[in-house]
Amino acid sequence: MKRGSHAFLLFACLVSLTFILPGLFAQPVGKEAWFYKILARKNVQCELCPRFCVISPGKRGYCRVRQNQDGKLIALSFGKPVAVHVDPIEKKPLFHFLPATRAFSAATAGCNLNCKFCQNWEISQRGPEELNYEPLSPEELVGRAKAQSSPTIAFTYTEPTVFYEYMLETAQKAHEQGVRTCMHSNGYINEQPLRNLAKYLDAANIDLKGFSSEYYAKMCEGSLEPVVRALKVLKEEGVHVEITNLIIAGYNDDMAVIRKMCSWIKDNLGPDTPLHFSRAYPMYKLPGIIPTPVKTLEQARATALDCGLNYVYIGNVPGHEAENTVCPTCKKVVIRRAGYMVEEIHIKDGNCEFCGFPIKGVWQ
View: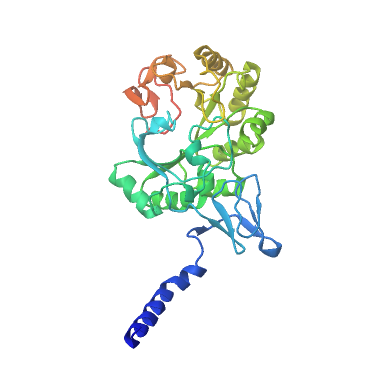
C-alpha cells in the first residue's frame, strides 16, 4: 500500500471515531421522568402509578416505557407517538364535552395494566422500540392540532399515564394557546401526579372496568381502589368526568355489582356524571367470548337510571336509542347521535331548549 493510502486510511478512521465514540456513550433518547426516587446501588422506584416498580439499572418497569439508565428513570416514549388521528370527540367517548367537535388524538406505546380484553393490545402491550412512530414534540403536536382546527387534544388509545411527561408538557403548551385537553384513561395513577396533571386537563373519560378488586386482579392485573380514588381526585380538581364500563358477558355482568357501582358513582361523583355501558366483542386474550347481549346492556342502563344517574348511554351498538342525550325533566332528546355523528343539538346556554332544565356538561 502506498504511503498516501496509509495516510488516507488513518484520516478516515479518525473521522469515523469522531462520530462513533459519542454514540458509544450516548443513552437511549428519552426524557427524565417525574415522580421517582433513587434507591441504593442506582436502583430507582417509580412513583407515578400504584405499581411502584423498583427498577434496577438497565431494566424497565411494568409499562415497558420507563427505564433505569444509570440511576435515572427515563421516559423512553417521550415525543414518540405511535398513533395520531383526528377523531370526533364522541369517540373518546365524551358526550357532554364540546359535542360535534374534533379531537386531535395521540398515543405512545405501553400500558400499566394488561387487560385480557384490550382493544389496542398491538400498541399498548409493546415497547416504543417495537413500533413505528412519528417524532412529534409537544409544541409540534399542539401546532398540528391547531392546523387541523381541533379545539381539543386527546391523549387516548393506549394508557396516557405511562407517557405522563409527554402528556403534561403537551397539555401545558396547549392551554397556553387556547387548546383544550382530555384523556381516556384507566385511572391507574397516583394522586399527586394526577393533581399536577388536572390543572391542565379539561375532561377525562375513565374506564371503570368492573367494581371489585377480584375482577381487576383477574382480568387486568391491577386493583380497583386506585381507580375510584382517581375518579374522586378528578372530581375535586374540577375536571369534567365521564365513565366507561365495558360489560363482558359472564365476567362483570352481575346486576347487583353494577347497581353497587352506579350507587357509588351517584354518591361520590354526582347523579349528572355520564356513564357509558359499552358492548364487548371477542378480543386479545378473550377470543371465545360472545358479543355482549344488547339486553344485558339495556338491563345495566335501566339499573343505573333506577339508581338515580341522569345520563346513561349504551356504546358499540350503532343506532341504539341510548346513544342520545335525553333531558332528565321533559324526557326529550337534546342531543341526537348516529354512532359518532351528531345530528341534532337542542341545548342553549347549557339548558334544555324545550323546558330550560340545566344539562350538565361543557358546551362551549
